[in-house]
Figure 1 (cartoon, protein in one colour):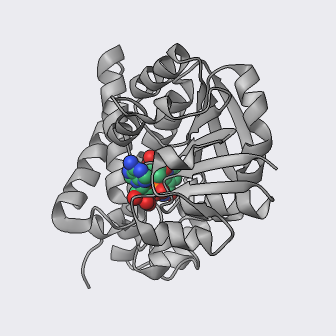
Figure 2: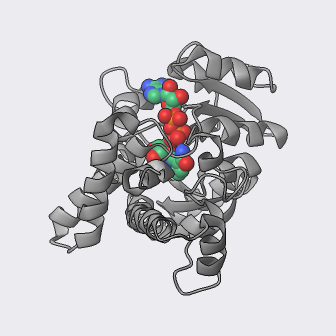
Length: 296
Ligand code: NAD
């Protein structure tokens, strides 16, 4: 049994912490939303009244927060969490943030003698619940080796992308492709339906043809085609439009800093920005289909 502090109990962090509890670990939890703490306490977690209290005697500190600014605000600063983490603790930030932010926090941790890895995830809320996430790790191999037994309780595939920040670079490249693929899948389905096809039949055809991709096969955006996906429940839960927009913005920043060409990535970012500006930022990102769907 390991002593774990888990901070950030949202759509992803909640079920990830629950899997650590199921594996028999002692998990102390904190979130800004009291109800999220309560849900985990009902599953056996210890509650904390602040992030600083949660890390008390932790051997592992895991954070799952929305964006760079939340992670930097939590760890750095005058009374940042780095000042409260026990010196032997291994810090694992699983949030998707800018690689530069991840490197800044890892550097500040190293200056205090603390070990840290960036370990963003892929696999969505379904993967978080089932414990089948993919972890994409940046940091030292020996720190990943220490983290691995815990990561294996929350995920199925664990990759070492490289040094600090490398996990974030790989994650951002993946999510840019996901944003492009989801927008493209939405357009293909809307085109087919507008021209008289049944979305279920069209989906079956594409899944067995060269247009097949994760968005159509595992996370179909058209309502009524698949069960247990956000499209089946009015796009509630899942991976928010604003989170996808954040990741596409991170891809854009990374591309500017290296002079990389991401024409389709920028186009996808604009489509998600338009969708968000129309009041849909909190819906799952597969709701982008509503931007291109024709009203009957
Ligand atoms: P979420 O908004 O559901 O959860 C974030 C949680 O962090 C919230 O409960 C919020 O209250 C909490 N929080 C924010 N600041 C805090 C602080 N200072 N102290 C304590 N708690 C704080 O987001 P999510 O969907 O769980 O995503 C978390 C991260 O994982 C994001 O970086 C996202 O890009 C990434 N991600 C999400 C998915 C997905 O499908 N949702 C998939 C892969 C990666």
